[in-house]
Length: 312
Image (tube, rainbow, N blue to C red):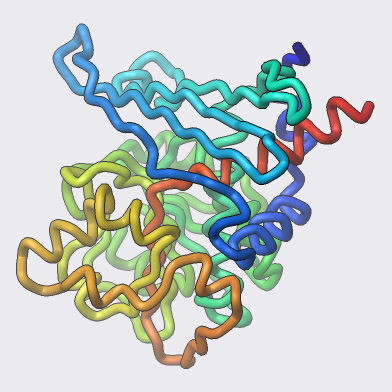
């Protein structure tokens, strides 16, 4: 078995190639790759919080199989460790033997950011100057790199987090980065806002968002989590990575529906429909892309890595 560590995984998943591969995969007929909804289990944490165990399988017509195993451990931040602990297994299409194991945290971070960039190709303003990242975890820098792949006009990056010291540290590692002290003010300055937190309370509020802004929400992967308030969801054109995932797990949308300001039937399109190029964005639109993750994304990224490893 080939074991691909974090550094090598990052090298084998440059954003240009990954965004292109995901765009192509989402535009394909749905029956080309079988990617069922992920299995989702609550696991008690010794510290009293809730961990999440995710099992995400996908397979293709050629009998290639990819399975991702994930532990989401919110308390890891207190230990200076990533919240997402994961591994990805790739099976040989001829024999079914597990032939490659890939660092799952790196693959997950890069495919998540790349999926948001795929959506941004159609939903974000054409020439944004300023991007705001809400969150200071592993994904914060990845979201910037991925969005700059499809919107190279981004020159200024604001970083906001509950811990201002962490925000400043992340900002120092980003070209054009600066820490934002006032989230409301930062929201008003950015044309792209990307949220990647594990928040259970709204952070970004509709009243702060200007016409023409694109909002990207990737953190709330359970119905009880949310990064936006109902007012933002209500005033935006809403798009998702997959309809099945959104209806089961998109806390921002499900909670807005419970509040009576949104209906899941109001989702305009998923990534498959976006990738087919049928969505037209107006300059004044507020667009919202909500993702919870899809096994197809892992499948595409894992096959990119495995193909290079086994060929070399």
